[in-house]
Length: 66
Image 1 (cartoon, rainbow, N blue to C red):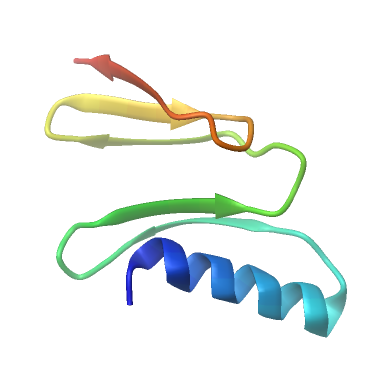
Image 2 (cartoon, rainbow, N blue to C red):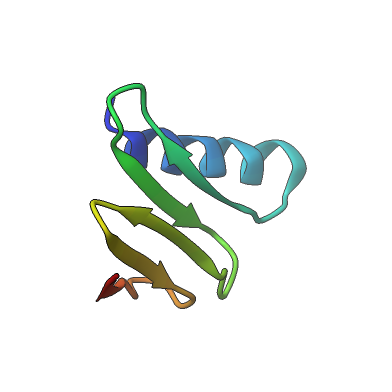
């Protein structure tokens, strides 16, 4: 299962069980990084292959070479 799918499924389950919002940054066993959140915004960042990936708003994915 792709890491973003796992994050989305977890957020949907949390919304049903506790009626709350949240977010996660997850890394799979093969290094795939996923970001997901159900809040209006969530600051997140990670570095992969000397590139900084970051964002705060839904759908935002900024990149900067390091």
